[in-house]
Length: 243
Image 1 (cartoon, one colour):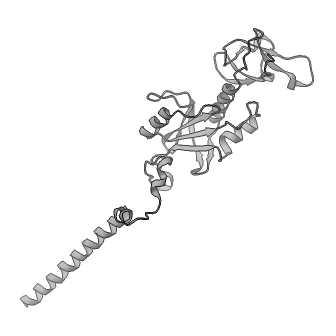
Image 2 (tube, helix red, strand yellow; image 1 turned 45 degrees about the vertical axis):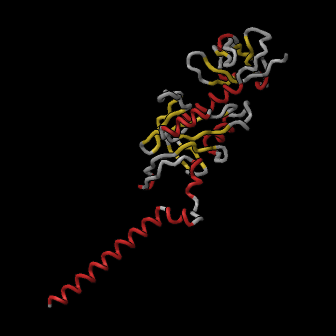
Image 3 (cartoon, helix red, strand yellow; image 1 turned 135 degrees about the vertical axis):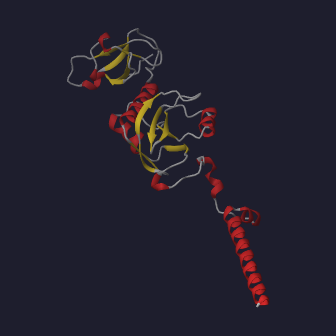
């Protein structure tokens, strides 16, 4: 079986994704395969064309693909850790700070945790596996502001520039799993999962209209105003009789 050419791997100890041109040659690269956990060798032949440089398993004929999807996932988390702003279709540009990867939170471990407007925000990166239903439900139940970034259409061998654009700037691949209280522009938003926003559509039936919060408000306000007018007229009439 022909081994897939791998140009990025994880460093032992730090788990930082590195390019083959940025490490030492051979065993000295100190990198490993995320799929089989085997040691990598950095193959850096004497060539002007560095595109031929690659990582190879220290043990031959493993049949392993080199964990390309895992590397892309790790690189995306590193982009989020280095960034300060992410663009979304629904919320626009969001500034964030203090990003931390794989920080435990209750029973889950978000890919990246950060802060936005004084509150926590969480990022999930999807390459081949999207959020499981149980984890999605947990995020909504605990009311955690969370954005999932879909990288399934991105090449596992994408350049740093392509990956940075997909993670931070592309708005077409972001899904807001949940959005909670926001202090943006002094406004407070309701705790509303995106999947439930369809409940905010305009009422159509008579029952929906009568049970709508605005209808109830105006009916109550009208009733109070009618009672006030009634009381005022009655008081005026009593005053006339006394005169």
